[in-house]
Length: 138
Image (cartoon, rainbow, N blue to C red; front, side, top):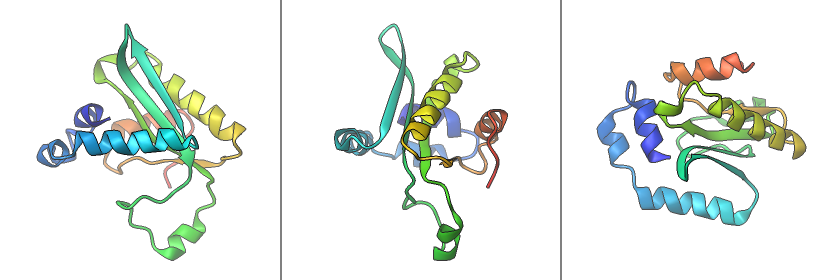
C-alpha cells in the first residue's frame, strides 16, 4: 500500500509526508479489517510477489475527508472501493481493471451498489482510469 502510494502520488503529494507514514500502523489497520471479515481484499501477484491490491467495503466516511452533515446526507452510495493500487511497472496490463471488476462484482453481490471510489482530486491518472471504466466525478 505505502510503496504503491509513493509511486502513485509523487506528482501531487509531498514525498516527505508520504515517507513519514508508518508501515506498522498501516499493516495493523489492514490486518484488523481483514480479521473482521466484512471487507473484500484482493491481491494481485506475479511469481509470488505482490504487485497490486484492492479493497472494498460498505461505505464509510474517513477521518481525512471533509464532509459536512448536509453533504453526507446527499450521498446515496452503499459501498466503496477505498484502495486500488498496482505497481507502476505493471500498469497497462489489465491488472487494475481485473481488480476493479472483481471488487465491483463483490459490491453488487453484497447489495453495496451504488458505490464510490475514493480518489485524490489531483490524481488525474487514476481519475482517467475510473472514468474509462464508466465512473463519474462527484
